[in-house]
View 1: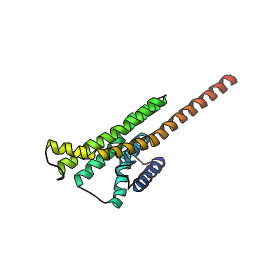
View 2: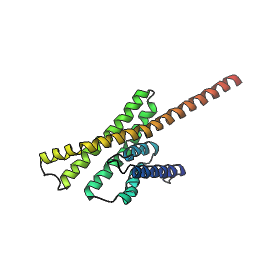
View 3: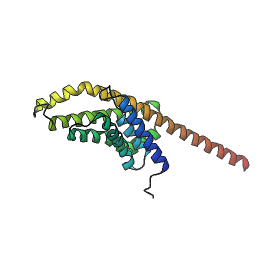
Amino acid sequence: MTNKLTYRDASLFCLLVICGVLLRLWLRDYPNVSPVAALALLSGCLFSKRSIAIAVPLSIMVISDLKFGGYDLFVMLSVYTCLMLPALAGPWLKSRLQTSQRVVKTGLTIGASGLLCSLAFFVVTNLTVWWCGSMYPNSMSGLLLCYSQAIPFFRHTLMGDLVFAFAFLGSYAVALHWMSHRKNLLAGVLATSETKSN
């Protein structure tokens, strides 16, 4: 088994990173609307190497943050972590999309993936803001206040994650089923040809 980066992987990696950076810059006026979590899910499906899959959202964030600027270190770490972790769900998500034969089931899988990304981001990043920052009292009421004031941003996060998850993963699911159908069709043609020749 080789550890070398293949041309396919390198091309896909560059394409996903460029797409993510451009979309993030284009959407800069829409708070918390981002394609990064959805691209992390997609990279987890496309790359067998977890390190490459995780590097996609990390690269998008690092490159685009050169334009946006930095913020509190611990908050930044929580943001980066929440956007990289979805890539680890790739094998599970890929198997679900490959075996699903129904549009509704595929849609539910994609929707649930986007929702879980949004919820994890909301819970972890706001907990970090409350714990490490000075904006809210270090008490249960302060934590609740932090979460309540973040709800409008959560709506944007959820909208972005769902829209991009359905766009990217929906296209990926269609491609999977098209390739599977084409493979089965080709196998049928070959089997028919062999039967006739016998």
